[in-house]
Image (cartoon, rainbow, N blue to C red):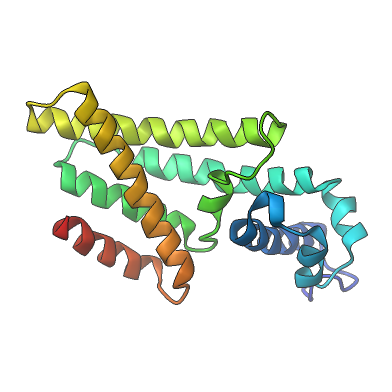
Length: 196
């Protein structure tokens, strides 16, 4: 049974997915602090109380989006880490990120949302996903530099920040150009990496 969100007879799982899809776009675009549950409900074609009946609070809704976004990203990036030359490893990692994000490019912004309340359960959970992704990135950078040789810890720290900046910039650019597919972004990122 299918139907528009808010119509009777929509299975609970389908309605939750619809709400989460709209919430991911709202949180990903405006950040937790500026996102509106009323707007999420409006976009989903349902009432605000119905959103709360499913997720209890704005925090609960954000946390559900975060739990949907974080694990697939961490798993995809972890799977892309294998011993290959640095440029290929970077390309494989970006391909994993873009492929995972294709259905919901704003998931990256949810995991890395700087507007979530400090010390809150959602910030603590987001930090776990960020740490896992950041750790994978740092290990990758370290292994790439080990192949090059002649570097020190400050070089590693700088290149790690550069790498995270590049990944974030590419994802944000993609969010601003939603007509681009994951395949488009993979090819574009390979050209950019080659140019860099």
